[in-house]
Image (tube, rainbow, N blue to C red; front, top):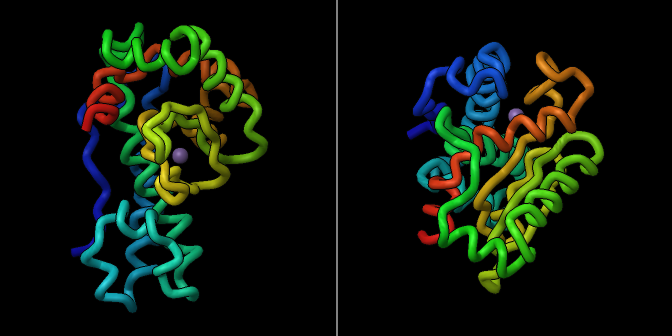
Length: 201
Ligand code: MN3
């Protein structure tokens, strides 16, 4: 069974004005589709790998044959990261997380606002293309992290809870070079319920 582009649980236009419909259409329909297609090509010769989940592939990259490992890392990562990203946003998102998650964030970062600052800083300071993350590390601790390109936190033994795509394709149409404005606007669509669910599962 080949990997497929997941359908979004909302329309492209419904994250406006924070994330515009055209960006969503191209980002989901073209960029994410391309990661899916190239992942399928990368696994063409390896029927045993085609039965694995993308999480299984990325959590053990050393087990992937060398001639296709970088392609799986890049396109498998692109597929998984974007699949998480779409669900981490919602037209009814924004605001603050529910009590359980908020307490966990306060325990680790001091306050919800301090967490937001650290995450924003990680996203702003990331040089080139990549992702900022809230992850649960191997010891169960929450942490802010950044990964270059399409690397997934799963490959480092971390569970991604919330990710922000800071590739230019995620914001350039609306925000041009103003990554900071994109990050600020994105907080208004974060689906905290989804993040809470990931933390507790
Ligand atoms: Mn992207």
